[in-house]
Length: 168
Image (cartoon, rainbow, N blue to C red; front, side):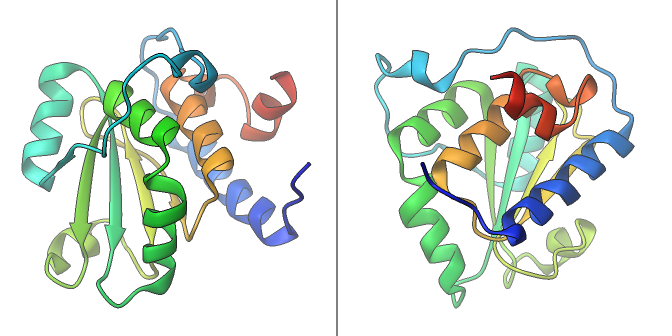
């Protein structure tokens, strides 16, 4: 069993507090667990530009994942290599989210709009483009999948992330 430092719990705690305080209420969607998706063909994440992704989220009724990164960021490289390239992660994102990749050095205005101060930073939006919460820093693939499930299933509206993990 993998153990996480207090730092990871603090990061998740901040994300959960942001989710709880967001007060966003949407219809409940049925969740498909990552373990049930092993029969799907996993390819790389389909990335969109910011404007294109927000428009697609609205038109397709999908939540939006925004990945803020920088060319010089070693933890961004680690996040892409160890988490975002995993077949279960890419498959889950491609099926259930619209994914947007923002190079924060080149798209400073967009990064500023989301108050990005460190890299990598992940933001999650509703289908209508409203902010749900952010998750700063590198996140291991198993934890990232749990966060994606938590958000996709709208469980963030009913319980804390800690309670969600305990209920699994």
